[in-house]
View 1 (tube, one colour):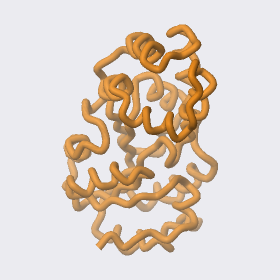
View 2 (cartoon, helix red, strand yellow):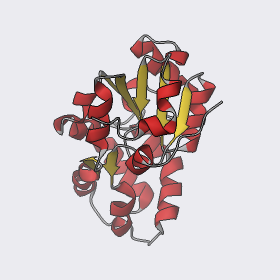
View 3 (cartoon, rainbow, N blue to C red):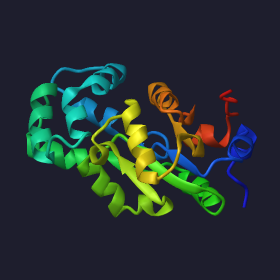
Length: 213
């Protein structure tokens, strides 16, 4: 079985002294539909770029994704903050569906890697989406599945990567990290981890990786 294109990125060269490959999930291996699904819920229309920008700095999302809010508390605060045309209960029901399983080709990538590398994931996530991912069996491919709401830190804070390393019982140089967010990659690099920005499954399979030297 081919290694799903990762050889062409030079990953085989840089993994020679590595023990574990660490992957982001949403937008990278897993389909997250939140930005597009949130748009019709807004009383005041916004572009997807505006939604994405507001999402990235929203303190309510950050609190939920670091374990400081329950799902009910999150839904109540989110509906008020974003001025949605749904009740908190209806929004929470819809919110749970925003994590939609593996992107096409992601499972094949992980299967191709699993027999040759240790694999783990590290995601900015929350209790509701983590439960959905677990129910779908997404974590079966990883020896360790770590989320911001479990660790109490949020990417790109370098502390989340150190916390992940502590959980994995590994030094930074033993890990290679892949994420679709440039700030998250930079945060991992600040923690001493070799990290690469890739925009989802298509780039994992097609686009050459940088040397990261």
